[in-house]
Length: 558
Image (cartoon, rainbow, N blue to C red; front, top):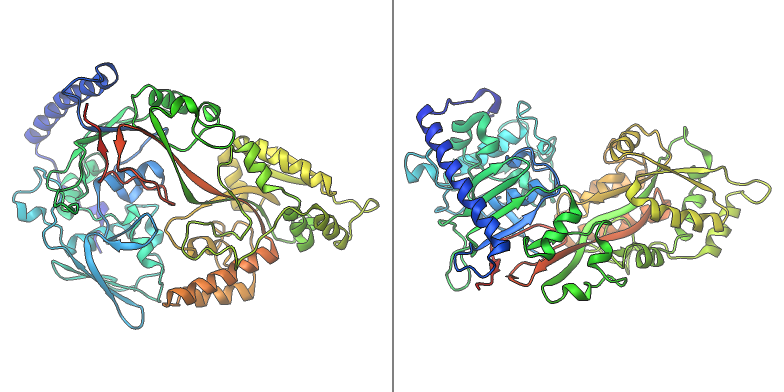
């Protein structure tokens, strides 16, 4: 085990001074060129730089802390993982050319490319030192698990890997991973940015400064980071992946990332040609960007395109199932009635400009290969069935249901008011309580709210990431509802051991059917990834995990 907190090196003083001066000069040049982009649009010296905005602060460039979309995107620019996923959510090779899995499912042997190098840096005395080796994989994963680092990604290997020597590198191009129990989704987890492969030599060389000076093997390398203002990445001229014509990726010269927390202003920058890409939609500019039917506004169609994809995020309402909560929501009939009472399609059409797909199957969203709405049938709008279930639960005009409080946050108030009126129509009174996001999460964690709004975004492209939420042995998170079912747990145990893909998917669907029947949640909609892209840009796609892959992106030369 490598103990990251104990291994530090002191930087050479002269090198630090030279590097600081160089960065200062480079910063001035890059910011000047970037500012010229919006003013001198036809200038011949316009850099081939992709520009986008992140509406939140960034605390580190260390992939071990890539816990949000911003960190995930940047880690993808700077680093590679052993395996990755394509737009169809299929696991494909990356640093590993191929891999073998033992018959018992406990040992994974990865065979690495032998001529991939980390980014050029003064910490490497020779080119050979910059070679990506299996020992760097051992270091990266051991570091991720090190308590001294306190990475939020440590859970990936926790209780899954062999307790003694889980990671081994018998030679420079062979890495061996040993599991404590079979866990088929492990390949999906290894594609996560947390599992980025970093240089052991560089990480130890820079020590505490690693967060601001990352060295990876990805398509772009670190240039400048002025925190909360701008991050500049430049093309890795030695990048190892090539297109079908033998041309090396990436095609871009660099990436410029701004950090403007005002999403409306960022959208205005996009419409003015100062940004090349906007991800998602915000209420502050929804009506300026989209027509009522969810299509791109006519006035934007001459300079932008809109791409859509299923997004691995399920928006839902959850019930806390425990004897300490109010009796009404402990009754399955009431939970089912509240599911039937909602016209999800109407809600999405009028309140979300047709963004997303009504959750008419289970908790697992479309976009995953195991999703099958013909097998898992959820709830459709049926107010008569809702009234019948309320009556079956023993409630009527003489014995009304006590008021149920729905805990939510301000951005979802309009959706909740819509549902509140539909529940009222079938005899279910609901009160809406608004909370700050952090307060609501804390109440969900402690079980202090009996009815709450939540969302679940997949960490990796496998339905197990969703079905984890209802496994009774899991605490909150992820099991905020405190759902418990012996039948569900038995299927869960079989599914995580099942190597045959189709058999595992069948088990997943059986588990999702139980969630539909027992109704510990009300699935609302399966989210949608939206990308507004400048017409000057080509080669940028969209995918269910909203990953930002810039390797194949080009900008039109003017």
